[in-house]
Image 1 (cartoon, helix red, strand yellow):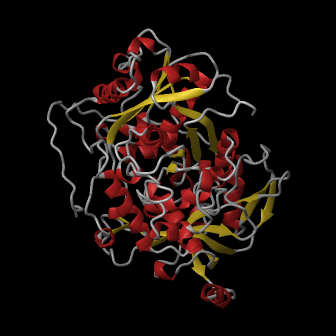
Image 2 (tube, rainbow over the protein chains, first blue to last red):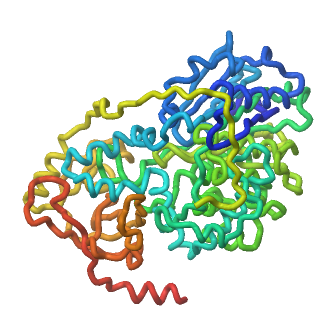
Length: 414
Length: 171
């Protein structure tokens, strides 16, 4: 349990686009940090005690970018930590910020996650990440044509289409259900200032008209590759009460690692036989809810941001983290439960499906959930949000992060 | 094909400097001790799985370490030639001449194991007919050389449970 109760007082974003050629990587980060400090009231950069940052250097080809952008992150003469865990980098940076405050070592901590994907070739980066898994195939006599055919579906979309096939078989969800999720996300994104793909008039037919990339996922369902950054400011309960109108208390964090999926390390068989089972997400959700004292997540949580680059994953995650009953999510989406003005709004920022700066994506989820509690979000939901969830997914398809936050501090008797 | 309402913004304030990453210069090392036995088995026409003595999970292809109990598995077991489809997808390649008939990519679970691996179906097979849990049988290559491709492809076999599944779906 935390020695000190950490609280989020401010979250900042930069504008996301496919190619931000008006700024370089350092300026991009600076935009998010400035936006964060601008909203933080009396906090100035001199008051920050520690800076934690992270991105996926392999995806943009910039090796150790934190070495040359300390000035832009307000990190001069301060401890600077770096966290990198693939797709969950943002979530891990957020959790590291929580740890730094909760341990009692630092009072005010700035957490920054960023990615400028237009700098490099993400596919090259992905192949270097998966080197331990696939580079041995040709050495053992797997001919190149077949390797290209079997793994050429690409690391991320290949695994997502496997998950989609198993999920659609379990829940009897149709392609129309997947398209409905995309439409909801992209329409929400149009109302949020920092998002990438803004499509206010997109319809289900528009999505279903696009060609297949990997069955059953179509071009219109796939997330973009964005440039962007996100910053969060953590501080102690006492300070947060003085500074912020509505401080957001982080009551539960959990991170869970699982086996890699589909291709194991060194060409071994992979243990995740059913890729949509996701026991890691179930387990880490349980731990985070336990810390936050939440027994009935489907009733107690008012707003959720889940990490869903592909629409089938959004349906899958909301079930696995306990917000909906198993196989009931497509029906709930059809009835508008998860819509902007529904009972349990989900991904009203537009989600990862509309904006995906990989390193920053998993941090934008808790950041946007915190802004919804503060009442300062770009696409603020009409209902009052007391408790919210930010979820992240990534690594070699096997890391999960959960951040549960509320407008009330953790109960002291725990 | 661009989707509606998407406007590309034009930013011009930076100059781009080009650089390259040479991934081919990486040297990745891996342990052959288990894989050699597995490949020798394939040359003889034996499908071998590696069993963990602690938790009895069987991995195929073999693993160096059991993720559940951190034990090095060392018990080789013969596996049947039958398998089942664990999950599948179809790849629409950009330079694929025939987009009408994409290749089915199948994750195969060999019977008697707890792991999956990626393999091919018969090339003439249409992926629309594939379903999760479909029973398969390994087809050997004409000449066995002790490499992975000794199992040339998998072939679907008659499914006794197919009518049961259909009845369940109707209910």
